[in-house]
Image (cartoon, rainbow, N blue to C red; front, side, top):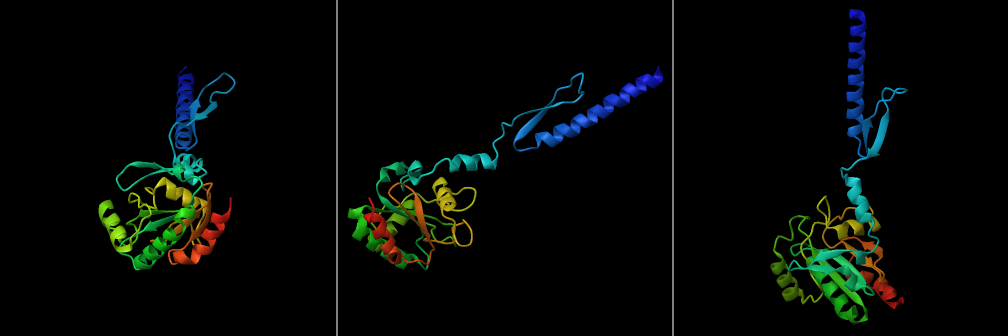
Length: 227
């Protein structure tokens, strides 16, 4: 009788240990959680059910479901939402800008020249201030706009300051980077990286920070001429 009780105790203990190991292994999975359901034919059976914890890949997939720049919304310099679908039918040049960079003078000057020349033909330049590179955009939105408009007579829209890299990167920039990776990876390398977006909202080209705006004029003209 004692031997029988001891055997039952050992069996229950071993089953308990096995259950704990299986639960630990399966509940730490990103995609499934596992429940135990004993049966007569199988003392321990595994039942897989969807996990309800959102993983990083879940958020990435949600972001990737947006296939066009026109699917996104951004904040303007006053914090108001701007639906980028208002730019359907326009050619977009999207640039992350900074006020205290060695590239500031040449880029702002040439961006203004391009905008003045092609704005009536369907070009829009969308500028996004970013302070991630050498802390070269430290001002607030009002200061940034005053600088660009006063010094360079910039008439194109300047939006809310954003991050372009990292976990807090603006969803628009995550989309731009995933659509057109750079030479050394997807991340934005410096101020004044440029993305050219066609009239349907597709990212068609990416340019390095050192690529001058006037040097891509031929690409702009070509896309403006397409129906």
